[in-house]
Amino acid sequence: MSNYVNRILDNLKRSCVGQDVFIQAATEVLFSLKPLLDKESKYEKHAILERITIPERAISFRVTYVDDNGKVQVNNGYRVQFNSAIGPYKGGLRFHPSVDLGVLKFLGFEQIFKNSLTGVAIGGGKGGSDFDPKGKSDNEIMRFCQNFMTELYRHIGNTTDVPAGDIGVGGREIGYLFGQYKKLTGLYDGILTGKGLNWGGSLARTEATGYGAVYFIDNMLKKAGLGLEGKKCAVSGSGNVAIYTVEKLAQLGAKAITVSDSNGFIYDPDGIDLALLKELKEVKRARLSEYVKSRPNAKYTPVSEYKPGTNGVWSVPCDGAFPSATQNELNLEDIKTLYANGCRFVSEGANMPSTLEAIEFMLSKKDFYFGPAKAANAGGVATSGLEMMQNAGMTSWSFDEVDSKLKGIMKHIFELSYETSVEFGEAGNLVLGSNIAGFRKVADAMIDQGYV
Ligand code: GLU
Image 1 (tube, protein in one colour):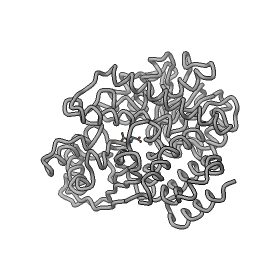
Image 2: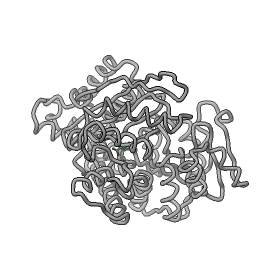
Image 3: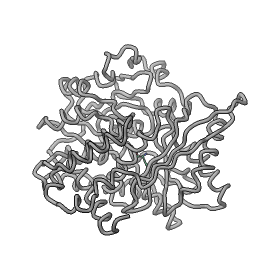
Image 4: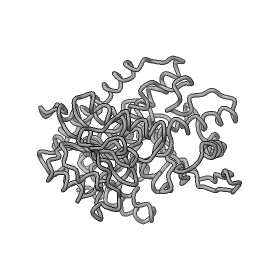
């Protein structure tokens, strides 16, 4: 086995103290690259792992705003520009109290390989803030976004770095960020994706990550002679990834029976009521516990009733699971419970939702189909790429046109990952397949471009 990987990981553990999620993401990628690195010495010769694990640049800044009570509020802002070998930095902004440099390095690192898999010419980046949008007024959100952009604007551009949304950053925030960029620069540039539909956004961008996660597993199941029709699925989260996973599952004849937020989860044996979910989350911005008021058969379980060390949403018997909330939300005990209850596939809509131990468990089961995040949730950023193309061509495509391109991209990502898993003698191990395929393209571009 490649000592190269172990040496790099040891160095990272020394230099990135406290950045546990980044080390976890790097461990997953680097371990699965071992067969490639054993076969091809050029990557070690050109110090690719040393270079690809350090961001080209990580910008850290202060964001200050005055809240509705006249109090000064101060937050940390960041943009991690991880890798630009195959295109401008691309990746979302996350506003959540857990955000720090380690979290954004994990997300930016994932983005390099995910973006490479899409086939669109985009590099990897991520940014955000420890600002907590929960409970803030619209005006507070606007002032925060404006002040965040007042610092960020000098670092982005449609051929340098194109941010988008992620947890805590949706259409409303992208609007405020875009308005401030325009005010500061006077430019009407496509410097953000996820924009509003009448000012440069793409149809189907909101739906893309959730739809993509369903398309991906559909391809994977079909390859095995199986299908989604009639399957009962557990979905976690209730943001746009979860909502549009629920929607696409219903369209393909499957049924989502759960959704969750940070306070608890809903189990609805009749299938999640999509219109109600959208009304609560997209219109009212309400907590999920409200759902049961209009659905008497549904049950709400608060986090306080979860078995300690587990995520309650995975205790519901199902055929497949779509972790669509956040990192490390599905651990070894959770996957053992899911498996014992009949679950046979997982498609990751969130970034790194499964722990390394849970992934190992899924890969060890011959009758289990695992769609890893970098491949399965790449539909969101791929459609951001389609938004950039529309902006560059000063045009806009119909919903069906974008959706059919998305479908084609997810099929391509599945096939590329699958074929790569076969090439390295581990047919169906898409962790290995997607990591190697994503890495190879970026690493070869880095070699071509010299030591920079
Ligand atoms: N935040 C999304 C992701 O994790 C989308 C990024 C984008 O569209 O740039 O891939």
